[in-house]
Image 1 (tube, one colour):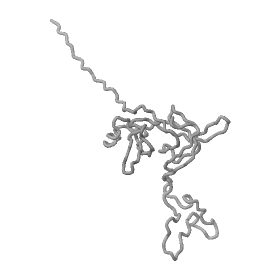
Image 2: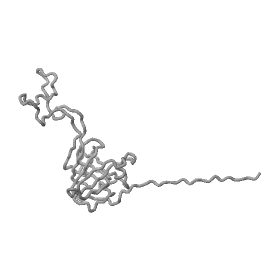
Image 3: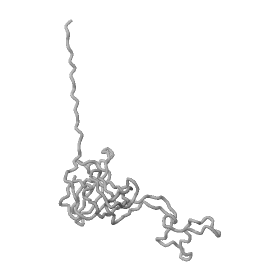
Image 4: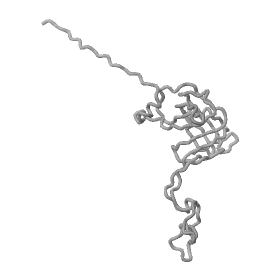
Length: 225
């Protein structure tokens, strides 16, 4: 995170997010429920790391690391190879951010659920952070949903009503007010309301020119002795 000084002098904490460029890899129409969706690719990856199926799916496009489907109302103006950039957002837009929270590993009830623990005196020795009773003795079972220790974090988290403070097309970054789910270099899904701006320049795979070596004939001069 960082901070931005506004025109009136207020300091706003923001999170720098690299949002794009994202290429439209596939446009899906129809299906069992006549749904419409687009598949978007993000992130650079070396081509040799792709499987044979992935390489065929991304034919004529630059290789991407992540693929995700998004439902859309219409696909009339969307074509394979179109680019979605940060210019689709504007200052002041309110967006919804979905990400994966930081994984904490196995955690007890004090850290995971905010239990206060037992008293630190009057005969309590080794149960300061223990959960205590987990149910009545006569029922002979633990009810579902009982708050206990377990794996914490690594969950899908949605944060709504986050405001975009600045948009930087030259670096493909947007500054979002406040914090977003997950840690550094995490993958986020950002969605908002409004018209989607598409760069119709197709993301055609750029092939490096092949330079062919021209053989040079050995010329020997015969000299008469």
